[in-house]
Image 1 (cartoon, rainbow, N blue to C red):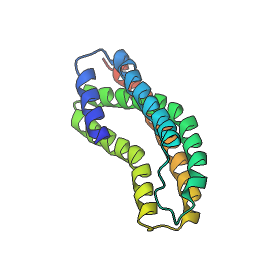
Image 2: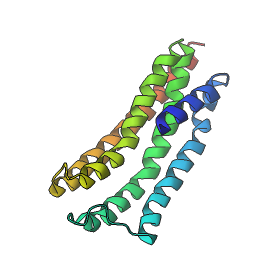
Image 3: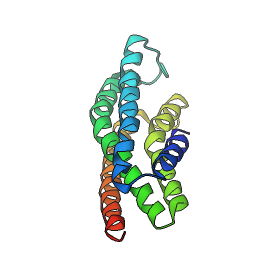
Length: 164
């Protein structure tokens, strides 16, 4: 849901603006993401609630949370401006809806893993030994996807500006 709302609002916010302003509009989204990441780490430490007492998930949670907290600012400050630049580039070539759908899908992927992981653990759908490898693969893919979107958005926006 966050991807649908954030990307739609971003799409509307950059629609009638200069292409160079596109990345700056997204810094607010990135700051909010970082704030939620901090709250997601701090609040469970203040109010601990075991997801499933049969799984030693509590031992892994601090490690995963700290990695997430360290990576979140990098991901947010690459993904959100990159998304804005890509959306603006798609808008300049009259393919804005296609860009919006792509960014919603990318955003959904980036935001959904922890929800799926928490539910898979609670429902005992995955072996606890898979938590760290799956988390590592996820964090790596999210950093790479964010960097790819930022670089692609930057290049696409520069190419769109050169053709104007």
